[in-house]
Length: 491
Image 1 (tube, rainbow, N blue to C red):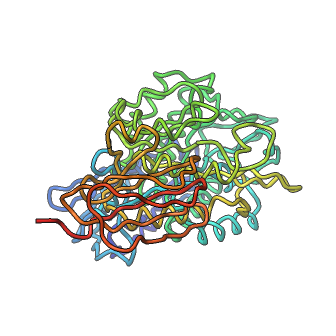
Image 2: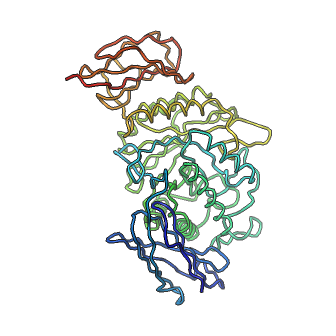
Image 3: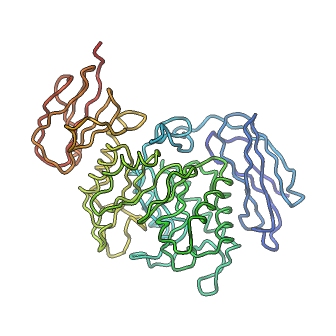
């Protein structure tokens, strides 16, 4: 029989074992295959999956350098007991491992390299034409976005009425789906695009369920749901740039209730040895983000005007990172959630960042092709993406561990301040347009002070170093900020 695997793999890269096995009956259900990988005291039990054509695969994400031994278990005798060794070498350039929660409210890669999520949304970009998918990847590569919210299942909604070319299961809408027979071609395509995102430095925040459905995937029964999740995790858990989002707008899923979401989380925990980030996204009602399986809060706006302003409150409520994945979209469609301006999108990003959170982007500008970025991808035409890139630059120049809200006392009732006490301060004025502002920096240090025009993307330094109270002259226009960075400590 054919049994193949590479003898070496780089740290934090996916290794694949391929095995020939029986294809009669329903091999998705009838054949069990798994592998135990061991390196010293580190032991990983990994489920395999059927990939069609009599081929079974087991995927392993190398997370320790050195020689790993593995042994395969199966209910098929020729496969059961097969074994081998894999040498895990140093990581490739710019490979830092999966993203983890860091310092309670922030993120870093497995090797402790800081990660600042600057996200956008293209819900069903993988269900579009090959040409449009290629354009989406080109656009992302040229942008500042390093996280993409995307769905497994196709979507039916306004501007989303086209039929996908591939479906996740055998069958059809007319004749019914066989939920016990996944379509390997569909999942292979999804994997190719997740790998393509990895190649350009983008995390795939994968949405496992959503309510916008005309095919019946949102109303599968419990057995079908569980089988789908086990199959999906077996295929994808070894991808380093993966996040699990259980649902987009879970509270609109009429066929699911809290016990279902808790069961789904348990399945993911049991089948993801690498413990990727996990969340669940709301429409109106928040999920209980205190649940131990939830690694970070994925939030949709709670008010037409205010969302990012509540970031610090949500941090205090749940004691976890706050990612506002949907603060509304820059665009011009009928719905209020999809027609805010580029200025407002940029403002919401800054408000969330200064208050210690991470805001996500989306774009919904109409065109004759109904190719709106928020769902189908393609090209970005809005004015906020370059301004969001400027914010990312400012954040990356700041504290490596992330920005936290700073309480400056009653005199700062009218603006948020964030940073790291005694080291770095960001004062953000948003829609206000002061001609000057008196600010305070600690008297224990000398600070470089710079005026940031967050819309025109300029940084203007004030000459000299400052300590204590100072007056900053401003241009009396909106979307200004002031950055103060410790230059030296006063002894």
